Length: 186
Image 1 (spheres, one colour):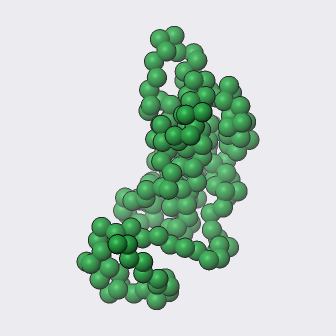
Image 2 (tube, helix red, strand yellow):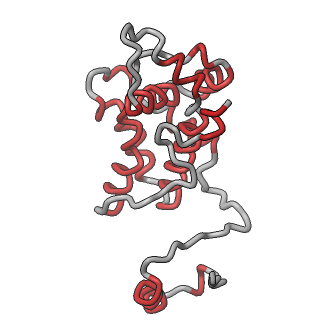
Image 3 (cartoon, helix red, strand yellow):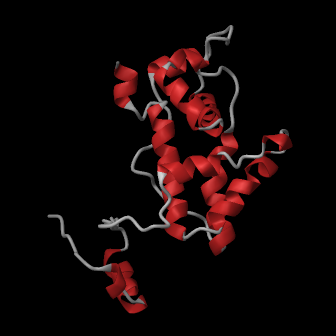
């Protein structure tokens, strides 16, 4: 039987949180936000962060991502989680058979790697909203053999910089290849 606790976040204190950890350590917590805060990371702000990637530093992935990591680490912690959530959603939407076929069109051996396909999808997101939407709507525009894996580590680096801890976040959508079942079955 599932138990649901309804508690307003403002009523939480350290003792209550410790009791929750002790009694329900393996439970998931879901937060329902009634009204979106003004400083919440919206999709528009997500794309503005992506636009901060510094491609003039090509060859140094940390330098390319640093402006995004810096800006994200200066935001509230829930925004770092939200960045990861939006990124996962975007990568999941590109996780389709048609996008995968297009991404390996230049591979003479026809070899398919689930990891490389994920990193190719990262490249699409890293190139901004307009390119992302273009590729999402026309899988034939999916780049082949061009990847940007470091996009996956931005939220973790920002969280670590802000808190000194490793980010623990499981997005509501998995970005791993084959997670979008409808995209692979159509």
